[in-house]
Length: 481
Image (cartoon, rainbow, N blue to C red; front, side):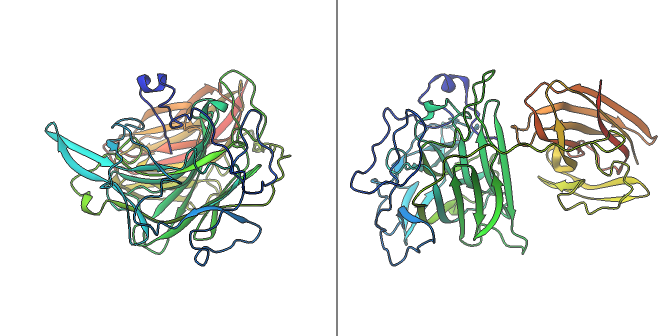
């Protein structure tokens, strides 16, 4: 996801940055508990690293190889403020979200053994006004490395955006977001309830790696509770839903723009804290509409449990990047001549995708990619054909060529994007007109950003005022002198 776009005025105020409120001093560890072996970064207080008694040890399972560090089963009558902070913020604080985060028990409360974060729609100054809740464990339950497990049920509704995520206790150790790092354990959009996201944000320039978990049985994450977890270790992070691993990241970095990278595994070698919130609107989910039922806009969390191993090996090295090699003819695109009628739903070579109201299909026939659109959707990428793993090397020049035509004259967009680098464009979004006559299109560009083995060639057919079928042949991406 794309997160933490902050108005310039707030960005200038270091206490209200993309990485949350900066603490004046790090919290001290509880000296009554034994320490775990883990090397902390220089100039950072050691985290509270030991097992605490469970609120009800009979209900909290033991995990092999882990000690329970802390937990909240939400069995009390009010939010446990020895663990959690309310974090109020004004509307528009980040991501162009609409809600005001409050300290009201109308927005954050306990009910039937669960934490409820509720979004409320009211009126103010003659317009719609939204309040909601955000809670954090900053300065109370910070830790370095561990396994976070949370069971939750999300609300349905356009514009609702629940999240369980982690930020560093001391943002300034590596710098403001995204240099400080961010671990998104779970995010679900109220309009795409079959899909959950786990994401790592880091670096300068901003980079991200996102995994998705899709329920295939027709159910949604709003129908019932699901268990979300992340295992954070010095050289790797792993994401799970209901015990199923769906995302792994072991290659990240952080740096000040134009300077050398900090030693790996920075920035994820410092204390982080858990936080939970229910946002309303914003740049990713879009704003609520008439279909959004705020009577049911409740994000329910059954428990949060944090476990930690007795020790971690902090002597880790950053893995080497693997770059795709070109075919014998110099083409980095595999099956660019569409000689193979491959599966377009898997993650090998070509993949056809639909988002945000887009409906359509794609098939390979007679050495041609045929893309049929039934509904164009609401965004450019609503109907999309991609090939990932394009090796982009800083300073190199590249050329994209392909043949294309359509049943009727219409526009499409071509680009080379960076899914793991904040979705920047190596080849900018380029709108081109395809007609009934086959044409050859050629685009040259120079790679000016950080080396990236995961560039992605995209053809975007959504939201262009046409559902005309498009035909593509002879796709090439090659290095040129």
